[in-house]
Image (cartoon, rainbow, N blue to C red; front, side):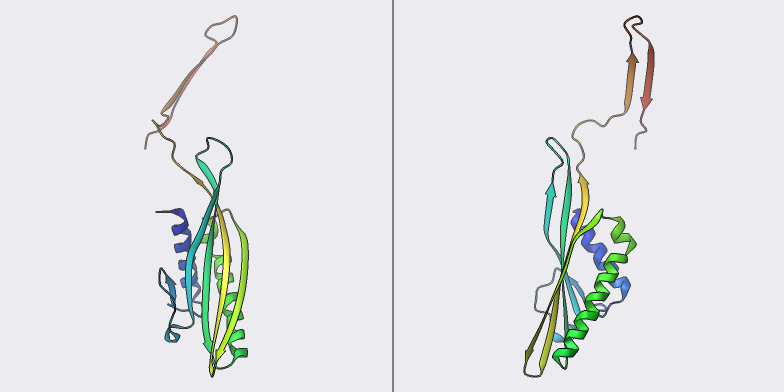
Length: 173
């Protein structure tokens, strides 16, 4: 499984454990729109994944997976919607930043932003927040070829062709 998918799933688990306003309405891989009967709700996706190599011939990358979260609420007035958005965003932020399993799976949260929007049509007032988090981690790909099972070395000096020997065996899996 791709590591970015593992991170996204850990974020979903963190939000479910935190019992946010969304309750069970935490969606992944679902198309929008989300009906008002399902509000408040969250929609999560890793919409970008970038990797940067530490140098030539490396089999590892410093990666940043960008998690996008969209939260939706509805209320009777624009002021009530704004208050719900603020409370909802705070719940999400606290849940993700304090979840031990999620934080242990990454090196750091390298970016974080939140934007809100309130729309009104007649007596219908909806709110949405967009939260962006950059989760940074190191990904190393397995090297090709036979795994190293032992090192057998002989140390030599100018005066002594066999000065010392060493043999180290690695346990096999």
